[in-house]
Image (cartoon, rainbow, N blue to C red; front, side, top):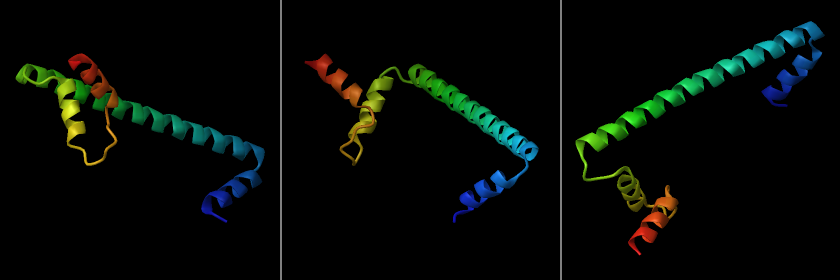
Length: 94
């Protein structure tokens, strides 16, 4: 029996008021974790946006799409990270 199974078994043995309190605490913890993840995501998005703007201001020679295509070209794996960019680039050059 795993630890998770043991916890579930013990939770079922709790009286109903304690089960309700446990459920409320678990939901609150889940909401807190979700809010923290959203904040981290937003910070990462803001950082990427800032990098994108800085790259465009610093060097007008290379676009964001070109950089993503170069990342795919240097991969050892045949699986591309951005296959749509390669399709669009092929269609544009044809």
